[in-house]
Image (tube, rainbow, N blue to C red; front, side, top):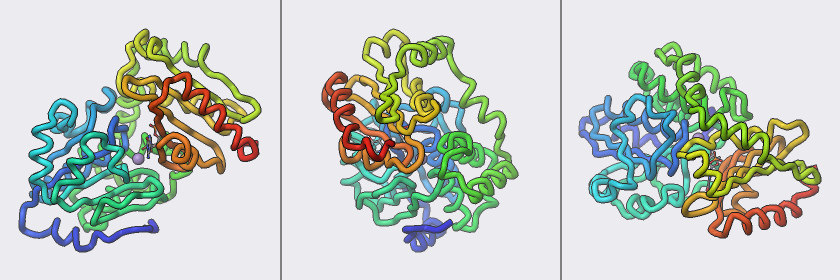
Amino acid sequence: MQFIHDNTDELIEMLHGKEALRIVVTTHHKPDGDAMGSSLGLYAYLKQLGHTVNIITPTDYPRFLHWMPGHKDVIVYEGNEKKCKLITDDAQFIFCLDFNDLKRINEYGPIVENSKAEKVMIDHHREPSNFDSYRYWTYEASSTSELIYEFIKKCGHTDKITSRIADCLYTGIMTDTGSFRYRGTSSNTHRAIAELIDKGAQNSLIHELVYDSNTMLRLKMMGFVLYEKIEILQAYKTALIYLTKEELARFDIKTGDTEGFVNYGLSIEGIKLSVLIIDRTKLVKMSFRSKGDFPCNEFARDHFEGGGHKNAAGGQSSDTLENTIVKFTEVLKLYKNQLQ
Ligand code: 5GP
Ligand code: MN
């Protein structure tokens, strides 16, 4: 794998030294499969090296990831603010996984920023900001979990990849590649996956645990969304889904329940851009997916305080749902040529 930025040699020496280090592993808010897979995988590896490691997530994460090895050790910042601050202030190293801007960890951001600990960024999103002293970064990796696999390999420790670590990293790579189909999936990704299976990753079971865990209510909501809520903006080859607060309440939507919806828009023939807009409690959350060259990350960055990857990005708006939809359709006009 070609690394655009890797200055971790000195860090690795310290990790391999005799001294037990106090380490925090954290990831972005509303963590997805890759965020949790990479964090729990690295967490287990660093503990094996004899360090004192805590894993902190800014918020809760989907129920379909609660089976993951190490889940019970995760400390959620929301609700455990004091404890997390103490641990973070006292840490010597903070590993920041699957994000590259402290805005992505909400109120936990300033605590990480103000801690004297050295920050380590391991990430695959474009346009990293500068808050770290060590960085293992390239947007060419399929997932942060693939990077953790590479990092452990770089450490010369593939023998330390237990079946539990393999399960974590497999989950992250699988979810971030849409089960090995998105553009970021490389031969390197498949080699990593093959080796993880050799290390004991329960590949078929993991697909089942992650994707066959619908509640009946969620399935009905999906039916409702597909039947009534996809709008096609033909002039822009764009599919739009929005969900109101009433709809979220009607289907008792919890963290992770709307995951994957945005992909249905993109599965329609001829559609180049798909957008999901959700009226969450505090703000309006947006997901963007594209086919081909349309840069979702730039679109999200320039208009909706977001970012991500070229074909998958997210953003937000503090305006009302109605106004956000209006703004979206207005902004879309600027991209008419690109979407043809
Ligand atoms: P999702 O639509 O699944 O929430 O996110 C798609 C991708 O964009 C993920 O890789 C995620 O990390 C990134 N992303 C989502 N929301 C934001 C955001 O508000 N800001 C930034 N910079 N990236 C985001
Ligand atoms: Mn990721």
